[in-house]
Amino acid sequence: MPNDEGHDLIAELPDDGSQQHVVYARFGLAVYFGQVLEHGLANLIVVAERLTGQIVDEESWESRYDALFSKTAGGLVRLIADQSHLAAEGIELCRRAVKRRNWLTHHYFREHVLDSMTTEGRQRMVDTADDARRLFMRADAACEEVVNQLLAKAGVTEDQIEAEALRLLAEAGAADSG
Image (cartoon, rainbow, N blue to C red; front, side):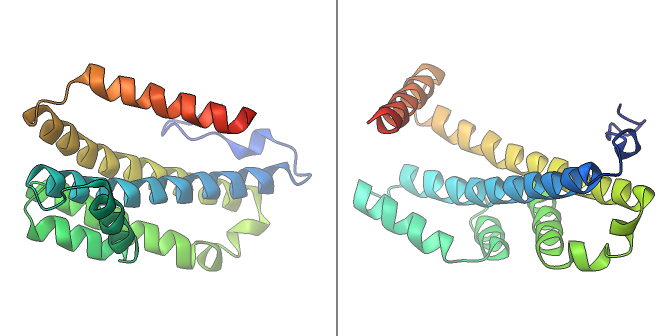
């Protein structure tokens, strides 16, 4: 049952490994959304560059993604800031999210080693991971909003985006059954 902040109460689970399972699952979910954010940062750059004519074909599109994914998430935020794709508050949100993502990836378990030994501590671990996930989702949504605005300016409609998503899902489904 969620507490006042919307966190699930880990104490409702038995201390038979179930609590630890939830900690690892929530950590994994948060890290996943950190990667979603990183891809959202790259998407923003690529869409903006495509619409300004810097990317002209599928080969340069793929090449640009490869180059961007070799950069750190902080490097992607700096590039977005340099190219003025996001307003100042969006940049700051992305900077905070990247800082939190880096902490989560490199320090979370080390700094929570004692927390992992008690139910209350494991609750703190879950709450921390959930808070990070929400931050990553907000930052990604800020990037996605700008991407959608850029696409709309270029005349790309919601119907076209949905049709492409359905095409990709069908392609993925065909790959699964093939």
